[in-house]
Figure (cartoon, rainbow, N blue to C red):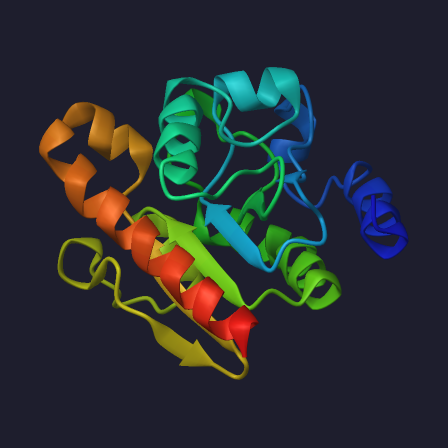
Length: 188
């Protein structure tokens, strides 16, 4: 692991800035290639993630991995996955604004160290936290927004795709756009 990222992770593992730090099993800091230039950001860990200490490892994670791999993206080689909140909210509820603020520094630190070219927000909550509070996942998924040298986009959360399989083709298309933009940026 990147030395700076390792130091940040070790600090994060001790965090008790909000109530979630008291009820977690594990801090879910991130997973994947820590030198990746594509970073996926979800909202918060669920039960499986809390148990394993890695993001997107349950049914949603398996689907996300499958969709990414279909376009040549993988946490084993060229992407990194993190969350806006590092500890599991009880009952898998949405993280509160207070919890998001308490965790914001950890994600900001990860991004400052990694300096990604593309950030892919996974789902509405992550997109509203990272791209903007008025972001509409149904209208704006797959659309790119420039932020300095980075491109920001969002895809449907794989849990939403599991609930409505009709969202899968659009999600795969959005991931293809991410791959194409990455290839274009890194080719020149």
